[in-house]
Image (cartoon, rainbow, N blue to C red; front, side, top):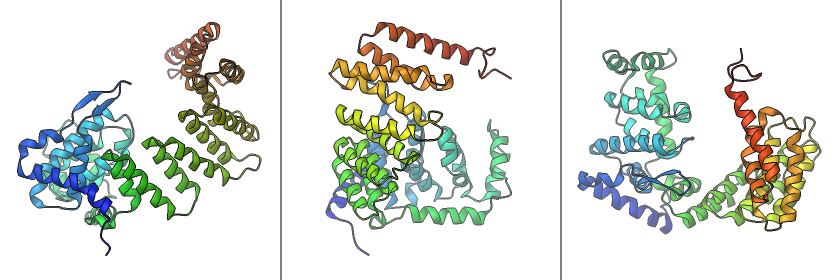
Length: 387
């Protein structure tokens, strides 16, 4: 089996050092705990997330029975991070922590796993129930039945389903061991790219993902993964180039929703990169593609299309070009289904304010107020309270 490269070895050096420190002195675990900090855009970030993930990653390749207390601590802190700072989604940081604890097969850890599973809608779906059952189904049921946990009945209903067997749990564990191998040389370059990003190693992450994509067929899936990752890292010019390639391989026949979707993705990236002229041209192409669809404009992509008009307004320093965009968006907005207005009105207001278009700004605000009133008033047609 081939070993890992010098760059991969360098990337693991810090996490291994931090793991050794944590093993030698539990007093240092406070440096791995969730530590909230508020960013300028009001997001909650975790000062210790990269270090904590690095230790989890190092533990994946050096598993020892005596590490269970440390693993429990890391899973608890990762769950706190998700509860306090992650509004949606489920990434390998939480599932890795959960698996490393579950692999020890201690029935008392079911409560910790239940906590991790029930953080959000996404964790409820993605954090597998079998984490709770690795200590044995019969033993787990016995512990839950004897408990006074406030969700005792709900947990029992989940774990006593006839489809759950110890054999199925064992198969799941084996599958997780294949997904999370104990040898770093068995990891894919895509995994290395994701993990490098978690550590804040942007350039290494870019190189790993680019190398991974070079060895894959240039399909929509490959290109989408590559451009999304590059954009996430902040390499917007490269992401734009990849998305142009994705547009080029799309079916451009009339009625191709894939082409419209790819063009809207290109608009978004060009806007983020500050490429106003190119984004404007791509938006026009997206409009032509959408117009060819049989159910235009009654489809979800309409929202993105109109929203991009408003979002592009502040990108240009040419006020006349900005007003033309606002005029076009305003035209589309007048024919918009009312239940889609909430997807664009905040951006419409911001665009009007940017151009000092007070009349339009006030009209958009009134539309937003009406939309909120209809959603909140149970007597309004189409509101949540309507029978």
